[in-house]
Length: 476
Image (cartoon, rainbow, N blue to C red; front, side):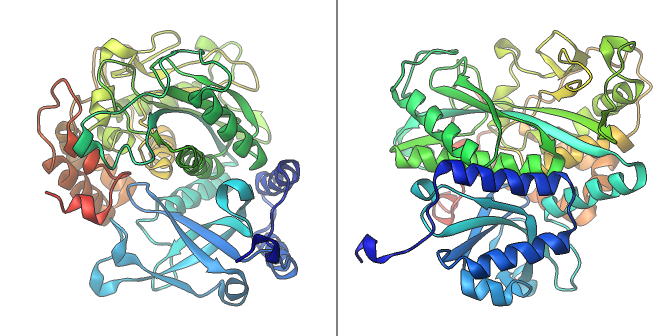
């Protein structure tokens, strides 16, 4: 078909940014859901140039799934969208497969047509069980419910910002072919802060940053990271569910831009041995009435007692929740002390080997940085486990808890056992969802060599949940 015959929505980047920032402001101000729903449905009805709505949700392991609904169909049937949950890893059994998708109309995005295709808008969905209740394995829904409960009971707004590192490799399917090639090929070897304008890494970073800006990310800085061909593109903090949504969008945008350049954006925690791995440092804070409750100019490291109590509970349950923050075989390569790895269960303002760091802050920016998070973790599970543990967990009676010589597990098998045996993880997820998660992690681990060794094995990439497809999974 000749493209001039089509009349699909394709907006300039500045218009996209304005629309996305308006939607972001509505979300930040907690505009009533029914008002936003009414606005979005009217917009979809009136805007004839939209052909489809991409509805997004994440499975239990955190892999993003997308369904395209014809715009006219969605406008009429948005409250009765069903899908086969048995095809989603960690969701329902085949005998009880039907699940529904609800719309979170506040999580609505306009995307650049030259990257995502013209005539489409994106919205995050909420997975609903057959009885109409939120689905227990949909961690986004679990996080949203918890954040809403905390706001209602204590008036706290939970905030987060993430520093997400990734690698850029040659070829559009570098991860899927790793079991054949046994190596990743760098596109740049310049290192920290260094790449020449116009080289593949800089072109990728610049393009990705432009897309993020257009989608309302409110960028802060971007740069090549320490390892060859490694990148980090930072953006502003947000309310916790919106922040987790942005992690999913960040990775989607990076992968899409890289693919269009004939490359692969990889968020494996340690795809190459001998250089720094990928982290997802998670900065968290909580506010009330616009006041940052982590800040106390007279407190230790200028943090409040509330914030230090939060840290103590994180340190107490560090081993319990480690599998949720580091969910793959490959993640335990990253927890290596030779590469600034945060494998020590302690808190420090300076030591980057500490699981928790206290960055320099002020009344606006005071926060807690949880460094031991891998970028392949389910972002909703990460946020939920950190915030609920920090606010509701126990505090261990360990002398000098914040500086005790304790370490996170160095392999996935130990992490699985610690997770399985912990009462706290049962309280977090419930018996059913906890059991499903353990089964998924165990199945991946059992397909990989037990000893990590000194080079990345094909199976730890091939059976990784973000690389997963049926064809590769069955090559066992």
